[in-house]
Image (tube, rainbow, N blue to C red; front, side):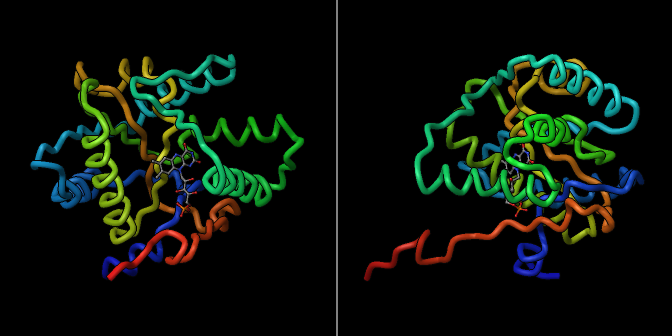
Length: 220
Ligand SMILES: Cc1cc2nc3c(=O)[nH]c(=O)nc-3n(C[C@H](O)[C@H](O)[C@H](O)COP(=O)(O)O)c2cc1C
């Protein structure tokens, strides 16, 4: 599989088999992903992988907070002001997902149940938390994104599925309690991963992309 194939085959996986990924394979994915570029080779990233009992305990704590309607907070600013066309794309993403799951826009309970799945890690057996020192800013966040993108492609190559989750930065306390996160770091996002459940209906969702001429310009 080449990089173009990996990009074409990747999608956000929201249904997983329960089988754990051998730690050796997870380490191999990280060993390749760490070759990602970063500004002045800072490598600002830390990845905390949570599996097994720790993953179950964390899921329970996060779901408890979500069910209680606890407001989310995060170590890094997460909410950009968003206008058209970006807000339209964001809405289309949510609605495409709800529609596949048979949940109407008016069905608040149904939408909440779907949002909750983030904190259940979409049943993935593993979740990784990506953090960087809390005083770092946008250039380092770019580096974090490059690592994330690289890791998602390596996982595709290795026959795994994954989903990046900004939502997993929303309740940092239990994550810091259970996962091994460096003391001065804050969480940017999570990545749930495992082997894909090909029978899961939710995995039929595909998000489209705008064409090149809408995202690029060429001057000579
Ligand atoms: C940084 C980042 C954060 C994301 N956070 C979430 C999330 O919290 N929950 C979720 O269901 N999807 C999340 N996604 C997945 C996006 O919705 C998804 O990548 C996008 O709709 C394109 O679909 P695709 O990945 O299937 O191609 C996130 C993606 C990225 C890159």
